[in-house]
Length: 517
Image (cartoon, rainbow, N blue to C red):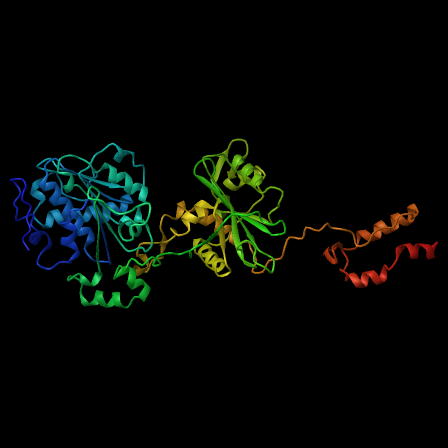
């Protein structure tokens, strides 16, 4: 294989930039496909150890060598991962393949240098960056080549910004590329954009070309038999993601699909609970209202004993007092059985010269929102959603953020293969999933309707009694349970009596009074 860069600068040998030199005699089939791809957008999704990052670094170097004055962005989500993984590999390739002499910066060829900048003798530049902070530094810079490592770690909105910045005119339009390499994380925006081409992504066009390149771990000729054996010992569902990269839609999903139904007025006797994921004065405060059908018949698509999310609050950038007032206002005349808030709201505090140390929860409680702390972690909330799904969970079509974030709540990366805990991708932004999980933690296995009957005394005192008798029976009645219908609801210091027994003992107060007097 001797594919060369035909327009390489005179001071860089074509043989040095050939794929036979950069990849060697044995390579993963995915690698030359990625390096030689002509499309504007290229996503390489493969198993672990498929050589995706290596190939993208090679493609970036060849592009910069071919077009003097090229500007290349090499990025990953976090700075630490970019520095220790992507940048380190780039520097190793340049050093090991005899390309270091064609770089004028940095003077000391060490990936730990602090400028995160490299320049070739032909004026082409490389910028190494992270994408988890402000993107303002990228919005005013044009690139001719963009490489995003671990593309699955970033949100589509970030990817869109970088697409728009890849427009530097040092090369023909068909030589500009945005390359992303990713692990298979199932149903995410990469799958929807490059494989199924679902809205809003749609299909590529001649002027906005797009390509998906896939490969398995086992196609890498450099994997020894021990590593291959370890891969084949993985559970089948992990093999599909981490070895064969099948891009199955359900591979990393944590929450089952929601059954969406049109919104309707919740009957007054249905019990209600609220889960709240709060912010102080910045960020999003989200609240979700859940109810359960306590009746024996289905109602508007909600099965008996099935949970139903029927209302959502999602507002950014208000003070806690305004959030609390709005949430209380959305309750209307109905009192929720309980309201639960993220337990960390009690530990994250602020200092006040007047009140001392205050927690975020204190601000909401002080504003009139009665709440209790949540229990469990994100994995407990996942199980709550799964159990609610088994009970027939439905979501009103007005709960837009929950409907959007539920399917995107997924596993991140491949950490458990190294014995470390699995993580959830971009967990901090899933405010609606957190609020919904808090609400679901409150509902019992079997619910009963809210009893809207008026609470009454155990018996009525007849009219016409003298003052002394009236006082006597009022005092006696205070020690008896209150009733709703034929059921006692409160007992004050005495054993509750069945209604029939009580009726036998107080068969006719008027008659008893007549006999006594």
